[in-house]
Length: 297
Image (cartoon, rainbow, N blue to C red; front, side, top):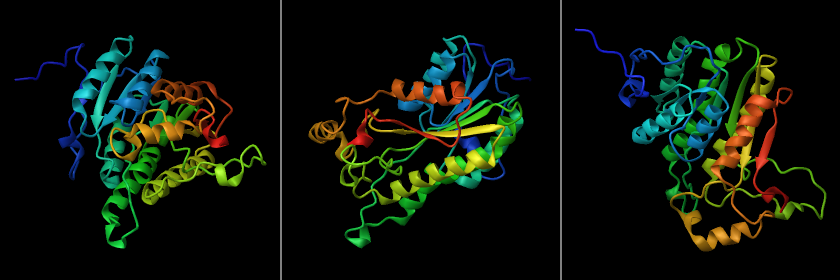
């Protein structure tokens, strides 16, 4: 007995079970005809990723989003995207497993009719204190490097031919203002002692995001001229949901050093992503700070 087609009102969801293990089962059919540009947003189910997915959909792109455990949020985001008049699908990825990510990305490349924009938004943020030395969790450090750097490289490599097919593809990576090199501004505008320093006890995270920034600059050369590669370095656009930075007093201290005196919003980051992906046709290898001026102080 044949399986009835997925109703038009139900977004396609490829479950996580298919994303894990070897060999990887083939992807089911995706709802994209290829008549509109297509964007892939990793971690697109919630928070900043959801805002990016909705902004690109509002700009007329079909959207494929990836998720890990947030299947309910992925379904809700797909429904919201479809409400904007474009198609949506969600595929589960375990970005902590770069070889599995590479295999899954090759499946996506074979299943998609085209790909115009790839947004590396998914990220993991964990502390890695060095004192006492026994507290250093190398497995957690390796996991952050896998999710934040190696899997974005694997996705970029597998999807680059599809992105470059029309000669106008774009990759945008979400970086971090606290892990990017400081701008060479002279005192008193930005004395070295007041630029954005890495967060204490987050060396592994900082290393992984710095590696992602290096990937942006390297791939801007390697994939030119058919694919542009840029980055967004946000300050605070969505406070962490737990940990020291969820403390209101800490947040107030941080905002005292932000010239615009407020946090950004996920929508601020999403509009910056759309600008680099769709409008900045002569820009590649650049990192745009979306931080309310925090890097200046």
